[in-house]
Length: 268
Image (cartoon, rainbow, N blue to C red):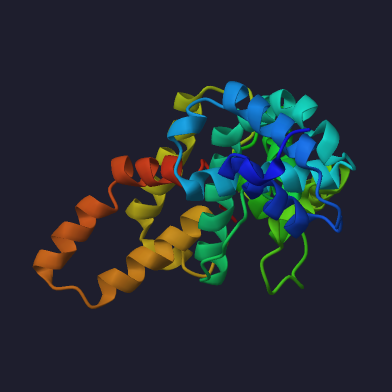
């Protein structure tokens, strides 16, 4: 019989983390050993990972395993699936970045999002899918979740976007209200990027020619930019005005529009 007192430290990591994420009190040494052997093969560069990196990976996997209702004894069977699922991490990270950027811009808050949270990953995939299906930017999908009704005073947690039907209903509510209010929106999700850029450039050029001060009370992404420009412009001297003219040129505004995730609600 194998002496469990002399097991690799990774096995003890598995057991400690498993006890932390689950309510299982009996230690399954054999299940932990099988898992570690499998991880060493399936997870690229496992041996070279730091203790912190190993803990982070194992915590994410074992938490996912527990929420899936699986046992530690069979954990090794699901490593490959988990590794494949995590390959979409870049896409998930992009959604989280867009969410954090929106919350910062709308609510002035920096929020922490746990990339290892299964519901976060699920929500990110839903947001990506809906954005692609409806021809919207990820940023706009997130934005519409918050702006479908006026009562929202705090940012929705990302996990609340894990229900695809609910996400689509919120978008429909927002779009229906925009149509009633006559909001100018870039239509046609299949349109090329150059075509959408031309729409933004045309609107901003027109606003500059009329005067941005006349748009500060309107709504939409360009209206927000007009307010920002006007606030900087009011107290600027001649040198500063010249710098602002470059900063808020049509070319730079189009660039900022792209960086903001190509929002569609331009101006009401």
